[in-house]
Length: 58
Image (cartoon, rainbow, N blue to C red; front, side, top):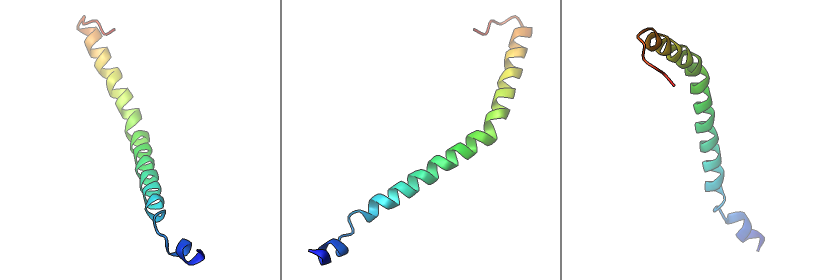
């Protein structure tokens, strides 16, 4: 029974998926932190330009 438990590799794939998912989530946070502030600043510029032309933004 101990030999069968030791030779069973069905849980190894789960570990790989957890590591891969964590890496993807970490990469997503890194991209969000680097792009987020510029996106907010750019959208503020767009709102200002639309307001100056009399276009309602609500």
